[in-house]
Image (cartoon, rainbow, N blue to C red; front, side, top):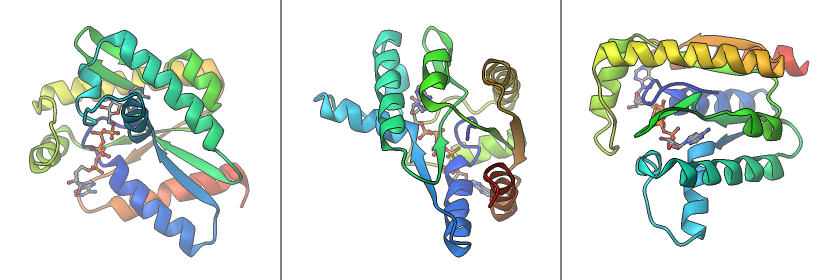
Length: 190
Ligand code: AP5
């Protein structure tokens, strides 16, 4: 499950967890950034989740690989949904969140792109005062949405897994979660 910062991934996934519980579907959500952050703490570094993308690219690459290993180790029975990013804006450029080595470890069966109107995303970022968000210009957000689609297409070709685009329009997080839930059900046959 991917989407640019502030598009509402975590909000939709919270609704998804409720749906899974109501329908007695065994589903676990893991947040890639949270696991990277736990690993940084275990390594004795104290940084918040918004500081990770400001680290040197080699540091991020190592953390990324360790997090992918951890997710693969933690995955048990049932469906695992990974809350993550198609790419991360770093100081040296757009960097893949799911490069080949990570895809090999995670073996995704479906890629989900969560999208919303750029102006909505900008407003959501501005309202999240507890986070250190990147730029909020609608034209930059539009570029990031396009880059996400391009990266998703590359991931689909590399793995053979389909890509589903889900809209998370204002106030429609429950509908977005329902759409995702139906797709998962079709995929796993429950
Ligand atoms: P992560 O924690 O995923 O950061 P993020 O993308 O900023 O995630 P958020 O949870 O803040 O945003 P969201 O899209 O989930 O939106 P939210 O639901 O909060 O990642 C942190 C870091 O980890 C990354 O920066 C990177 O460094 C690293 N990382 C992660 N994956 C990586 C990978 N694969 N490789 C390398 N590094 C990786 O919603 C935002 C706001 O909008 C909220 O106020 C919410 O209430 C509101 N909202 C949401 N939906 C709606 C709606 N439908 N209507 C109205 N309001 C809504």
